[in-house]
Image (cartoon, rainbow, N blue to C red; front, side, top):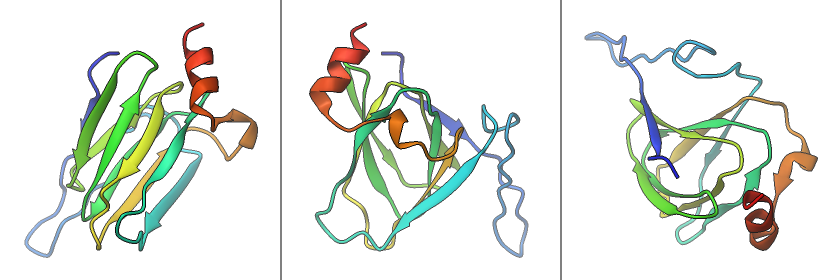
Length: 133
C-alpha cells in the first residue's frame, strides 16, 4: 500500500475565527456528491468495518479526534485524525475502521458518489478476496 494520503487544508480564517473551504476537484481530488457526519459516538464504540468498490472519500475530524485503520488487503496502517486542517483520503478498495472517538468528535466525510449499498463490501474475507484480484 502506498503511504496514507493526508490532505492539508489552508485556513482562510482571521482574528474572527477559523474558516476552511472545501472544493471538489480543487483541494478535494474528486467531485463531491455526498457529505455526512458522525457525532455523539459513545466511548468504546468502533465504526466502519467496510470497504467500497468504487467510492472515494475524504474524512475530516472537524472537532475532536478519532483513529482510522486503513487496510488495502496487504498492509494495515493507523492514523490519528485530530485537526480540521487535514483530511484523510480513502481510496476505493480500502477497508476502513474508526476507533477511539473523543467525546466531542465530529467526523465529516466527503464522498465521490451518492449512497449505493451495492458498492459496499461489509465482510472482511470478501474484501480480501476482491482486493487480491
